[in-house]
Length: 515
Image 1: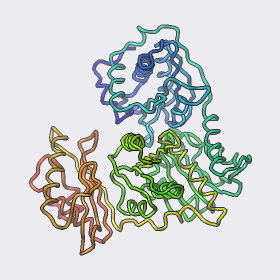
Image 2 (image 1 turned 45 degrees about the vertical axis):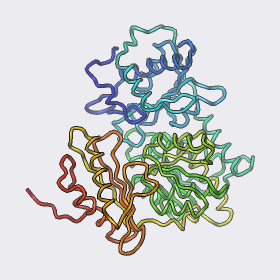
Image 3 (image 1 turned 120 degrees about the vertical axis):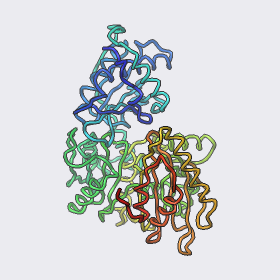
Image 4 (image 1 turned 45 degrees about the horizontal axis):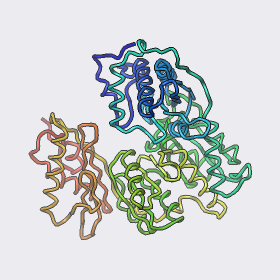
């Protein structure tokens, strides 16, 4: 089937992934698209590696969503048509797919994961990997352009193949080895005495409960382990309040030592301590940072730009360096790699969304590996009568926090967004109550002095990478601080057309006029 010439294939690009509606109404990510992308990826791999396409092997996996099986089979067929070898793993995780490119006995030239992460059941997508890591945004764009002009039926060499093979058991062994190494034991059941509740959100990660059981842990109270692509219980998203509240209740009800939760493809995660307290976002970053800085002080922790001032203080008090960078998990990972190449000791790149990449694990954003490291620490603390929450008890959290998204209606949204940032920058320069943060690396991060208290609030105004949106994050240590900062921004945008500021005005306490 030929690529649809009337379709804008680039609309399927989402950062460094391909993503779109794949079930229900208004489907744009269908079997034809997956088939063409499979063929295009195999041919691109042959060119990049300078190998005959007949020697190229590509592994394929999927999460639990309903459109996954058909899209996986279509992508495999496209790989076969190109003359390459497609190896289907079926249900798998995104990190495991990358590991198949570097694991002895597999060593795939490339890997494709069919997933849309935490998005609704009707969405799906494709993530692409080579042994050097995930494809970057520009490479995905080139792949889409190539796929859009292809007709795999006309290039079917007949020499390719599609085979089935299991990889999850190998990946599980890798995680089990990390637990044994971390605990410095070789016993069959090193987690004996630890009670962990696993919430897979009906995604691909239910097998993790089996892994922990085999290692001796009590996993009673675990929930939503069976794959169900309709996600009937809650959104598989470690940032989702309903999902975290459900896990907290399960931990408290079962009197567990720890709860863990994954998104649908397991590249993001969060945890709950034995007191039922949620550990995600800034708390999760603080927790893994504390563990890494216990091992060695002076290390640099790379995060995205929206992390809190309390987190920065927490890291610095433990002898670390907090390095804020741009949003986007590829951005923080690439920056951490660059810092290491410059000789800076940087063991971690992590987003507040839960994407965490450890240097010891190839800087792969792997939520399940992160949780495995945390379980090792939880086991050690349990033996001392402690829990993970104690590691972050001193983390200072804001009294108020708010995120606002202002929609840009101007035709050139990037130009208008930059104009808005420049306008705010000018207002900051004219004010004695605030200043631009010294570690500002995206948009404009402004620190406020409020009610005589220095650096008691901040906001970050930035332009979304892909959408005509200006996200604003605001945090304050004082009551009413978010409202005052919102008013500062609202006044800065006065008489500026092309930006919808109603949400900002509401946050600032400006009465809405009915027209």
